[in-house]
Structures are given as structure tokens and as C-alpha cells.
Length: 196
Image (cartoon, rainbow, N blue to C red; front, side):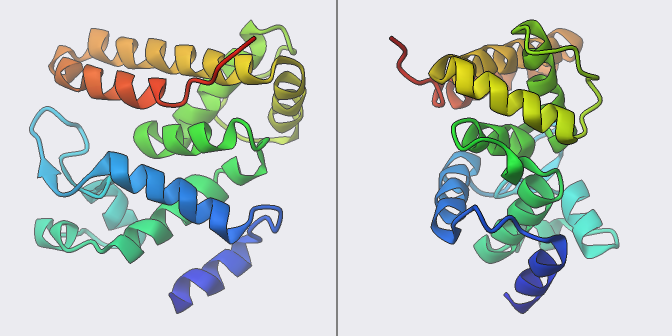
């Protein structure tokens, strides 16, 4: 884990996130992602622990083989999750209430898509008109903080609803992905919170 520590130090990992919280979020994601699959209907193709062959190739800075994907360890998956899907896209700077779901969306659908979902929700909920560019800048972060402070659990549930619409759009564009819709729906709904 020497590489991870050095890399995260260089990335300026937010000290407000406790190591335990990060580990718990990653534990939850690892349970959802499972092991090796290579489904012809999945654009990610060869995938292990949620890490696609394309993602692993970028991580290695060279083309990964299917065997290398099969050999991805939990330690490697944890490192990739934390660096590529939490710290780099700045998901770690979001309010605690929405951070676990945003981290999960980032891994499941890509960081840019996760941030775009949040930006659309901020606009729809009336917390400002911000650019839907998939970049976690100060405006997106500030508006997210305001939205969460005012809406509480409703913000989390609204994010679930936006996520479900996103998945339906994927299936509408690529019907072969329909076989994944039930799992995606269950995954999204697992973040719903009780409201008054």
C-alpha cells in the first residue's frame, strides 16, 4: 500500500474523511460489485470487483490482459476506488449525507455521470442554475451543501430518483442493458432514507 499512501498524499486527501468511513464505504461497494464477469452486453466487458478492463488499463498505464483483470486483488480495487472515484473527482468534498451514494454512483456509472446527476438535481430542486458539466467545482459543492442542509434525507431520495431515471435512459438507448436494470434499481434504492 506504499503507492496508495504516497499517491493520496499527493492528491491531498481530505482529512475530514476518517479512514474508517472510507473503508466502510468501500466495503459496502465491494459487496455490491462481486467478482469476475465478462458479459458481452456490458460495455465494461471484462470486470472484476467492479474494475473494468478499461479502468485497469488506465491504472496500469498500458493495456491490461483478461488474466490481469481476473487477478485484481481487493487491495488493488480499494486503491483504485479511493483514488479514481472518491478523491480525483472530489466526491470526498461533498456533504456526508450524500457522499456514500455519490461515491457508489461514481463507481457504478463513472465520476462525470455521478456529478452530472447531482448538478441536474441541484437545478431541478431550485438551488441554482449551474452548468451540468460533470466537474466538481466550488459552485457545485456549495449548492450541494445548501441543498442537503435544506432538504436533508429528501435530497438523498431525490438523488436516488435521478439515478433511476439515468439507468432507464441507458436501457432505452441500449436495450441489451435491460438485464442489469433490476440490479441497478436495487442498488440505487438501497440508499433511500426515511423522511418525515
